[in-house]
Image (cartoon, rainbow, N blue to C red):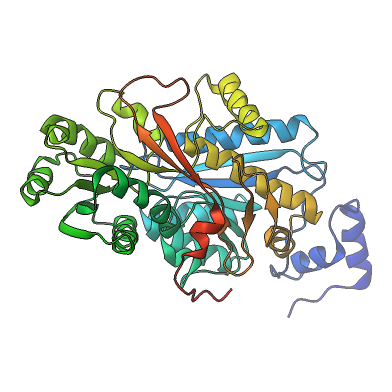
Length: 414
């Protein structure tokens, strides 16, 4: 066991100029590393962002960082958080669990971040969530929607900013059925995300008295959907439901247009779309009815302020991925300010049950029992022409409490 004299201890303590707490100093000189990190007064508050920047989900992943940066710039201009400036660290998770864990571990162990945020793939989000709890680090999931995050895979250190698959499906399904009918053919990505969307949409359809008349699953990263849509045509559905996202969804919608299914009165849509899909598609290929997380036509003061901030800095109108980065970062930093510390447990307490302006019409809050962000879900119809701000006509705003109340019994134990 290492020993140190009282005189030597006091000499070392004096040498620090009072910057380090005695408990932290003692841990260092005795070769111990347990206990909370004590930050230097001038040290930045650091947030590590993980995003699928080099995967089929990369359509606008960089926009997460754009939104987060606008939030951080605003906070830093106003003096920072707890009198300290905020810095963003960014890494590509490549939609790969091991890549994500390596990047997240570096953020925590080497970069000493105060919180983690980001991810889209369900498998990646769950893996990083487990690591965050092990390392006593807050993790704000911004893109993943798999039910395990607030169900059997939930934990005390993870908050889920994205609506769950069930919340999204319950919002959009009545509009799909009303417009196209209730006989659906599904095209699903062979991922945890795709399967979660498939199950949620099938359950919501069943509740509307409908049926799934056919199903095909496609590998993650598929670019040619000709065969899948040929199978859909043969089944003669009222609509093709695309349980896809990112470039998979872009390619599938281009194939839908090329196949001329609209002329056969076969509709199209799904659980989640948005400007991040509409822009790569272009107006000519965009079609269908979709669940939307956020839209630039939301007419609130906070939403307009956010839009202008992104335009001023990046010269583009925000996507919903931009919204996630901005709104999630804002909630992390405001929680730190309310807690008066970067201590993880204190931040968690500041977030649990907290109601806030989610840049939508209805209220937003983090549910205490599973850390789900309860929020409005929008429903939009894609148009093949300019609609002012965006590619979608807004059909409905579904209050968050409606979607949340339809969830199956939870098995979350925080």
